[in-house]
Image 1 (spheres, helix red, strand yellow):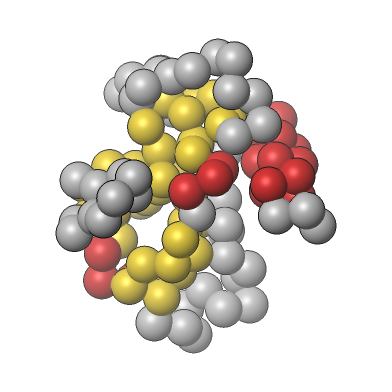
Image 2: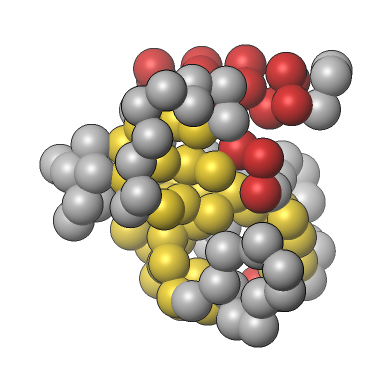
Length: 111
């Protein structure tokens, strides 16, 4: 399975602990393509259908034409998951979403 940066995948995030999003849900791959396909894990940001318009730095909006429901990328919940948890490719982010995600990751990680 070929995994590419900024693709949206369905992933099994169970088990979760504390405030970590769990369940089977979409995620965005944020790991460099230099590692994708070579490394047994992938860094992702989970996606939620609980949209919060006011949380602009911590979230990136995805419209329902890209996924079944309006959704937000949870920028502050990035984590590495085993590649076996990636179930199927659902799509990819558009250019505006890419720009916002890169900017927000930079803010959250103080890069």
